[in-house]
Image: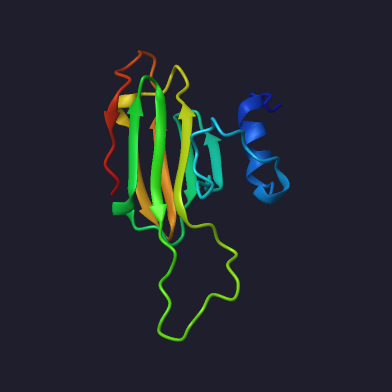
Length: 146
């Protein structure tokens, strides 16, 4: 018999919000600091017995444009996807992809080994691996992207 999957309501909510077109959301109050151009890339979070795996869709983003860091148990991914330049006489007739600054932040589970986090970029997807450990580890550092 399969063990029941742990549910995380925050992850479920994030998944649902990723599917909502921002134009259907109410306007943000003036005190909200996010810029209108900020966006959250689609993300898949999986768990194995050995690790947590996060895949973030970042097609068109160069890995040098991505900042992946850990601070106080929060894993943050920030970056920028620039709007493609147009040639002389060329204009954009439609844009179905979001551009400019993006960010995602994830709370690390207590059993994640923050010293062993790895990341690599493959075919426009940022793959982050958070191995599990029985002992707590440091909670702040920068993470290199291979």
